[in-house]
Image 1 (cartoon, rainbow, N blue to C red):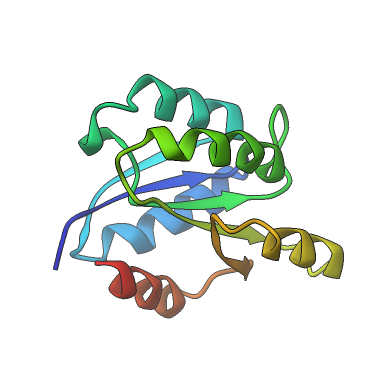
Image 2: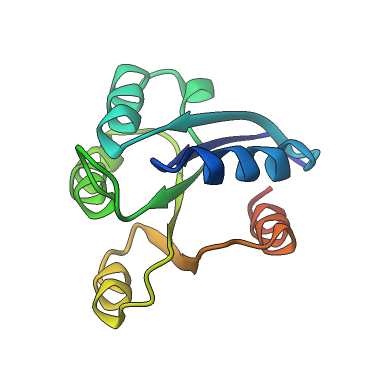
Length: 132
């Protein structure tokens, strides 16, 4: 089982905390980085684009955030992806069950899945098992 670098991009501190607790209980998770908006996460990725160990293997990305929301992040991330020498899975995570959000997410090939909050720890473990 490989060791995974996980990014949590969400402005909800409580959600960040609970997801980190779940992720820390999974042996395949090597590191967890949290960001409060898409711009922070994108800055980190761009600053470390040549350091594979600093890049995420998986991103849990909220839709509704200040500064840069999840869809704005994806617009820029999709352009950046070809310059990264690493496959990065992105899971859009939201409390929104709006069909328009889901449809918009499905049109972005770089999004692996659309997940509804709150995430169950079993679901997170299943996702990580599939990529590790």
